[in-house]
Length: 352
Image 1 (cartoon, one colour):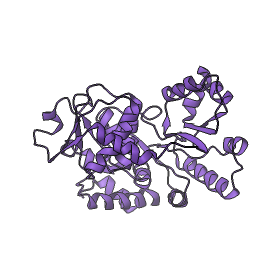
Image 2 (image 1 turned 90 degrees about the horizontal axis):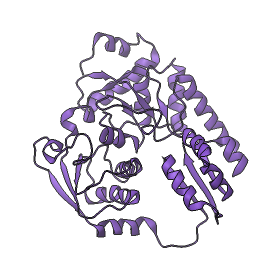
Image 3 (image 1 turned 30 degrees about the vertical axis):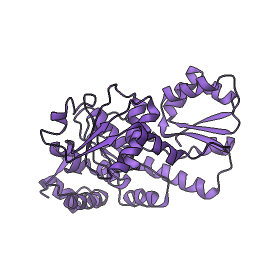
């Protein structure tokens, strides 16, 4: 990699040990992926986890004097007060690691949003903006739906980027790597947000590679929730950090542009039978349940409204947990959805 004089100084410790340590990790990643230089970022999102390795890493950077140049938003933690009061007493060990993690991220300069859908609120990039996002639903959304530029970062590499304000330039930061290589022909109407979850789960079963796919045959623009769940499945059942829907997403107005003038490396066909098979595989047989949980990724206000509409005047037979951001919970309270769900015996839990 070719570093500028300032960047070489950062690596050598001229801006402190935490910056030097972060630069060592980032230049190592850059060499692995063939990056030629480092480039500045304007935003970051760190997939905080409140687990041992996560806490160890952020505390190590703090111990080296770390402070974020680019304040990152962060993934959900645990709303200890709500869970302790309403659902179950949290063990002391759990309280300690959550509290310590939250305190460490606060000290290092993160924005404590505790939300895994920052691209819907709080941290929304613009087209072409170079950013560093970890989180499985966030990377495909910002790349594909918005047209911002981020690689599939880990929580550690995204935190390093927040410390240095830089990322190695490789992968989806380069124009040529954003072009589609796999053509996916969707030969069935998609009848709502859930079908996009099935499609996102189905495609990696047909082709498990990391290449950028372009989907054709989708006539109507998905809702934000459809996009959100589609990308989350592509990036968890598979390793797709970016996709195109031809005629819909911003970098694929037509097939020619989506593929950069090249022919597809492979064609994949997905039918209604394929989606039905996926549903059977992941859903199991109907039967008695002990509780229901919604909100991974965090639910949007429209999804909370859907639940409130179905719930009005009824009682849940089991515990129902709805996970969302603090902003969405606040809005749900203003709109009356929180009262409806609480009266039915359900819980809207934020930051979790």
